[in-house]
Image (cartoon, rainbow, N blue to C red; front, side, top):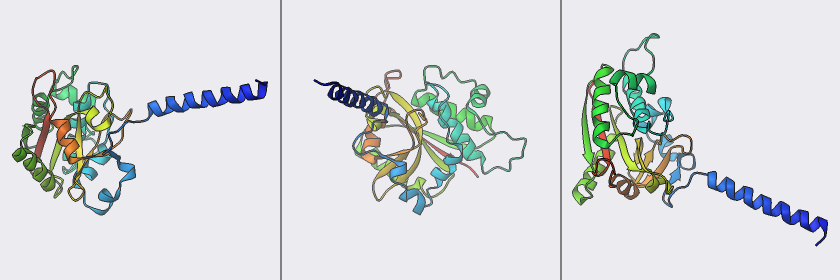
Amino acid sequence: MNLKKLLTNAFVLLSLVSFAQAEDLKPKYVSTTVQLIQKQDYVRKNKAPDFWSFMPYYVPQQDGAACGIASMTMLMNAARSHLKLTASDALVTQKALVEKIKVDYSKGLTLDQLGVAINKSITAFGLKATVQVIHADGSTAQIKKIRDLMINNEKNDRDFIVANFLQGTFTGDPEGGGHISPVGAFDAKNNLVLIMDVDREYYEPYWVSFDTFMKGIHSEDSSSKLKRGIVYIQFNE
């Protein structure tokens, strides 16, 4: 084999290795998952009140266990946007929220712990709301209830959904364990749920089918031994 052919083969081999490594670094999604950048029509053509309420405050989780903290930070800022804030009223940060409600999130938060922490945050930041924790039971009646709730949730920006799900169900990542992120929107016509994933090191907002969403929240939390689910928050005017 001459030197030119040897160098060419070596270049091709290195290129394939580099490409494979680059592919490994790309986000992995299940077949029904679509990145928001590839499907923007819903949030452009519809009110999508929760998406536009969350978007200015969309933050990455500050560490590997802080998905619940980041989600609550987005939630508190979205809710406080209706208040008459002054220049001295700082935005809620993850650090400020943890210090204010004294929550230990070092091992992550279960769905019930998330519900308690959201309630404490609402009180701590001078807001009023009702908080409903819903563990997914897989029943036809509950699936319909959650879908109807999502449809109604698209009507205004005074109620929000924070989901607790198995991340790998949405992303295809075998290491994607229990996770928490806000629901940004629900496209009822196409049966798609927008997840504003706070794992920003690897992901951006993405759509999953409603069936995939239900599968993700109908997973068992190894810590609590209970099914995951959603927290539905209705803020009072």
